[in-house]
Length: 349
Image 1 (tube, rainbow, N blue to C red):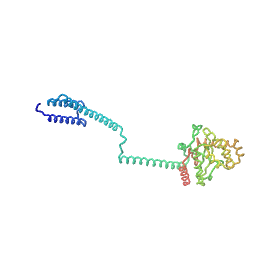
Image 2: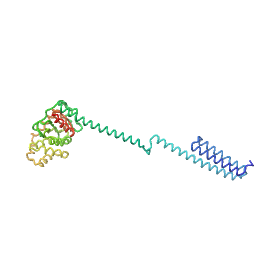
Image 3: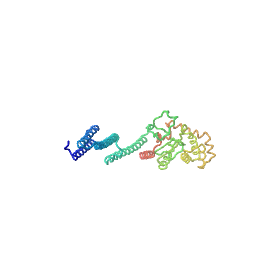
Image 4: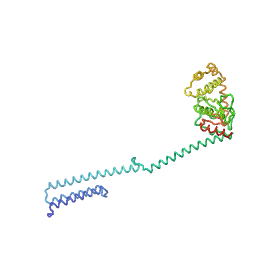
């Protein structure tokens, strides 16, 4: 190869370098060659350069220097190749993770947001309509029962607002209507009114307390339409002071101040102690001596027991329990339903 001058040799070497670069770039961006194929190809071309230099008459040291430069270039290409392979693998792993578990930074488009909002609004609308329908049904149901009479309401109790007696849990229930109205128990309204409501209550029952203000309000609003009678039903098995509180209320009745004492007991329900009963009598300007004598006697205990037995006979198993025109309803009746029932019965008559 004597005819090959130095410029031609250098030109061929540069051309081969560019070819090597192109093949490496092709691989890095999608070539089917493997890492070993690229390495072998690059080494083959590297060996052609010292041959060209040898034929050109260059000394051995220059050939070694050129070969070293080519090897360095090869190593640089190889390092770039390996780095890009690593980057590609990392990217592939991240893509797999995002495919398997949707990435958190993917934003929802507006159509999806509107669809979700519309769905939530639809569910909320149906929920409100459902609750309203239940309320209307309960009003109509109880109104029909009160009008017709003779229908047992024991299976339709407001048991979520009801203190049940464990001692009476297994006692059988009678069906029908019950005449539990009396003339000697505390009362509000007009005897013979279209609606007679008898409540069996416990001064330590939180649901009786809840209902007490409701009935006082309705009795004041409809004095000619309602006759409300209060009867004692102390749940001594779960409320230790209920019996004494009932007897204290009866002693206050003897002095003509039952309703004042009734309100004081419920207002202080959570803090009542054995000494509270006399303190309340003193605060209400009762004859404290007569009150204490009454409370210590057995006379009021017998009165309370008579109410309790009458309630058990009529199917009372907890407090509060109501008898509306003789129909038994257990549990604290919501004010809106009770008021609607009263208005319906009054209008029917």
